[in-house]
Each structure stands twice: as structure tokens, then as C-alpha cells.
Length: 400
Image (cartoon, rainbow, N blue to C red; front, side, top):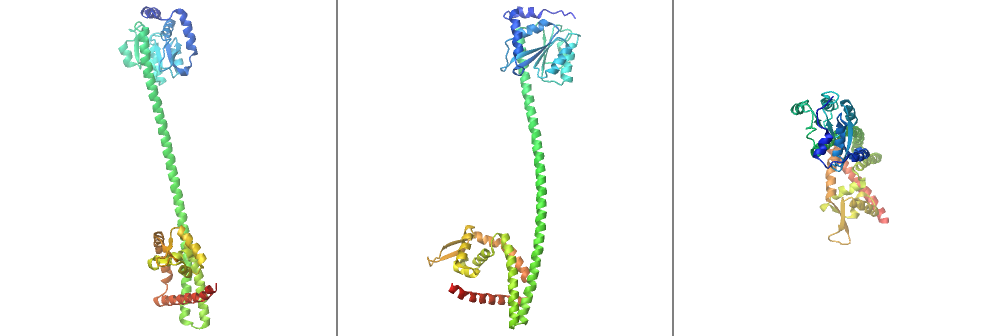
């Protein structure tokens, strides 16, 4: 198809006399072939005239933008242009002729790039020698072009400015797209993290529920076992008080003592289990309870040893442990510097206040089975037994 346009070479040479001579063109072609694609801006020249390709390359031979040179791709028909733009989606600029193998070949390329390939980044510069065939106002409105130039007006200087403007827009859009992709990736990762956290929360909640169910089952079993022991103790106490009232003879007393011993062993077993849950031994718990009942919450180590029925050396070890745990403290007696006294600390008082409701509940369950007279008889009996045992223990302690 014949085109009534001026030769691109003559136009550029007439307006830009400093362009390279023909022997420089060979050197330029070699240089463009050695440019690494990742370090250059890809320029697709679509025109059926070889001279247009040559002049464009010559005019932009020394061009750089943002530290990168240009690499050129040439297509001489619309079909070839479609194949090349599909093979090189990172093309920055397309210099596109309108009239090639058909009158609207260039316009078909624009639709293919924008609509079929969905490539909105590449800057399409329509460069025509027959502006009447594709009027600028019609093409600008109906086709996705970024610039419109006639071949007669596009001197080397204007070509330079056009390329700079197009590359700046392409670089900005590319950076915005990359930033958008990063944001989208971060959003996806954030959603995945939230999903994982929700799943972890659900799993943790399920584990907590399982643990609570296990604890409830364990507490139920423990309470059942505790109730059985308390019920046995009730029966023993009833038998003991009944024996005291109806069998004052010697055999009955021996039987009562054996029953008391049995009850004592069961009480010790229950209290040992309870003190283990509290983290204290029965002896340590007895020390704290005794101190809480004394004036100024104080007592001497010897009084504590006597009350707990242990040696002074054993009491010293118990007090060392309690002092390290912060339940008691030892200091000099205010009236006798040679003597020590043991005092219940605030932490010890708080600990006893915490366990008191639990202990009171258990003791109440145990003692409510007795009427006032039976309870009084039990107290008198236990007091007599303790006094008797203390009297028996005193001569042995003196001998030791």
C-alpha cells in the first residue's frame, strides 16, 4: 500500500543535522543486541517501512532513563506485532503505525493489546504518516492510546521528549502495580495468619474445655472419695462417743483407744492429702495454725516443737523451710536476746485465710454429725488423751 509521506530519514536529517551517519548505524545495531533485557527499556517499533525502524534507533542510540538504556524490537506488520507484544509483556513503549497490511491494522493491534491481552501498562504511541486515515480526536476517544504523533512532526528532539514522558509514566505505573501486588500479598498473608490464629484459638478453646471436663471429673472423683472417708469418720466418732458413755470399764477403754487410733490415722490421711494439695506438709501446716492462735502470732521454737511432737532439730529444719517460703520469720526475743521467737508473716496469715473456708467446710461436715453432748465428750476425751501422751513423752524427752 502506497503512503504519501516524506521519508523519515530526510525529515530527521533536515531538522537534526547532528544525527549519526550511515556507517554509525551498523555500530548501533550491534550495541542494541548486547543490551541485557533486564537492564533496558523495551521499545517495540511497529511499521512496514524499514527506514522508520532505522531512524528511530539512530535518534535514540544514546538514550538512557533511570540508569537503563533502550532495547528495540521490530515488527513490520500487525500480526507480527501481536505475536511480539504477547512474547514480551514487559514492553514499555510501542511506536505503532496505523496503515500497514490494512488501513486499520494499527488500530486492531491497539484493541488486541488493551482488550485481549489486558495490558494497560505499555505506552502506545500512534505514529502515522496519514493522519486523515485515523483522525487524532477519533482515535484518542475510541482507542487506548497514550500519544498521537505524525511522522512529519516527530523530530529527534520531540522523539526524545516523547520517550522520556512515556517511560516516566510506564515506570510510575509499574511501581504502583508492584506496590499494589505487595499490598495484596500482605493482605493474603494477613488473612492466612488471622485464619491460623482463629484455628489456634478454636483448638486452644477445645483443649481448655477438655481440661476443664477432666478437672471436673477428677474433682468429682476426689469429692466422692473424700465424702466416703468423712462418712467412715462419722461412724467411728459416733462409736467412740457411744463407747465413752456406755463402756467405762477397762476393756471398753482399750477399745475406745483403738478406735481413736484408727480415727486418728484416717484424719491424718485426709489432712495429708489436703496439705499436699496446698503444697505444705502436715507439720508445716500445724506450725502455721498454732502461730495464728498465739498472742502477737508468735511462739518459741521449743513451744512449736512440743506442740507438733517433734525434736528441736526437726523443728529447726521445718522453720528454715517455712522462712524460705516467706510464711514465718525469726528474730530475737524482745526481753531475752538469747532466745528466738517465730512469728507468722503477712503471707502466712493470707495463706491461712485462703485455706480456712475449705478446712472449715470439711471440719463442719465431720462434726455436724454429733450433737452438742457428743461433741463435748469427744473434745474432753481427745484433750485427756493428748495430755496423757504429753505426760508420757516428757520423761523420755528429759532422758534424751
